Amino acid sequence: MSDKARAMVLGSFIGDSLALGAHWIHSTERIVREYGRIESFVQPTRNSYHKNKKAGEFTHYGDQTFVLLKSLAECGRFDLDDFSARWQDLFSEYNGYMDKATRSTFKNLVLGKSPLESGSQSDDLSGASRIAPLVYALRHDPEGLVNACRLQASMTHGSAFTIEAGEFFARVCLKVLAGASPVSSMNEVVQERFRNTRISDWVNEGIASRDQESVEAIVGFGQGSPTTEAFPSTVHLIARYEHDLREALIQSVMAGGDSAARGMIAGMVLGAHLGMNGIPEDWVSGLAAGKDILAFLTKIG
Image (cartoon, rainbow, N blue to C red; front, side, top):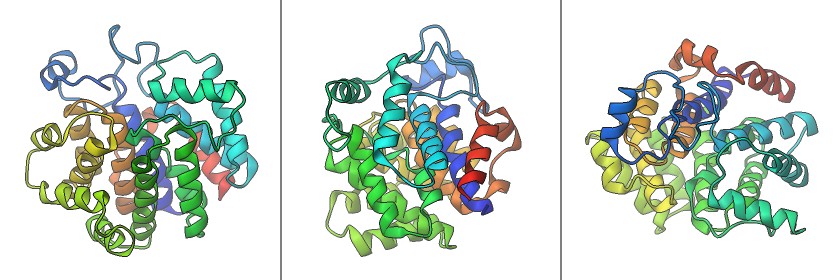
């Protein structure tokens, strides 16, 4: 098991779990007031979106990603039908918050739509944030990886922005795993695949903002879930903290809004860059599903 590939997956799950308590709180002052500077997994408060969860567990983003990882491990390949069946089982009696995209997709699947036609109209970045297990499993099959990333995103999110964001960050991760820096990888993928697109604009804007304080930059781009806001905010985190995964994920949480989607992608890319040495040990040991994640990664190989 590649150290950096393993760190890529753990970094993504940790990015989700660190955001659990403060997820979707847009007031940065409220985050500080209720939690202080979040440097470890915290128990969500009673008025949290994820009040039924415990410190070290996942938001519904991380839970979906865990189901994808389990599907890959048990099938030995990416199987959209298997993933969608497990996904539907997850949410059939889910003890947690379900956002609009999740509720819409679940309804479509219950009505008998296939996973190729079940996607909501959502353009949230979260649909692209689940891809770390796919990058791990298909890291030696670039085109198979891209196809799988697009399919898994479209199962829940019908927006081209979300689907293309998944492809973009998958291609970035492949370059980073091969030894390139995150910033150079993002620029290369833009030149190779995304010239004169909105993604090109978001990458340029995010990298250009790296000298700004993160709260200021992310509030400026927009703290929300839509890819139009969350994509450049995520690029900012990757570029500003290219050598500091810990601070990238902390700053993502402290900037408020959809910190989980940002954190999952930033943690994935920076984990692929920095390896296990870049991830605090207490974050790894505090992850509720950590042992299961490592077992599934070992099974995938």
